[in-house]
Image (cartoon, rainbow, N blue to C red):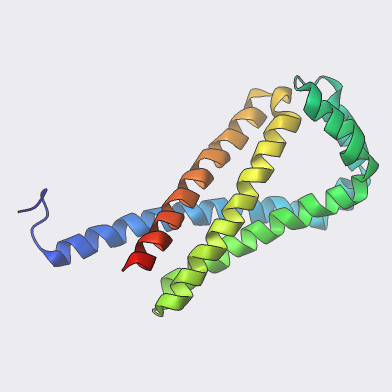
Length: 172
């Protein structure tokens, strides 16, 4: 008996359950990014109204340096910024879904490794976007602040876990 594990088979079963739970969290993140991105891509009002939105986010922003970013670079490049946000969200969602599917359905270790690398890249993009959304609009309401934090931390934790798995598989 080693820490409550009765056999090697039980260890594999427990590890599979943990992995399934982590991949389930990743699917939820994928859905959030995909639905958010699709909503922005499918609705021209997002692209057309981004300059006004950026101005609104900057109006009472408590972070002077970020307010300057919103009123400067982001507003000066509003259309490109809007496309980057919309298609970035879509890409993160697609990347997370595809990586999860590849990890679950393929047995080849190279495919699983690539799936984890894609996951880390997509999660990194998600962490950056949530941090920016928090800095831009977190002050507007508790729910906006909270939803970005609720997505930020699990993505950061998943990144850590996937990188740890990648590094541990590299050593063996």
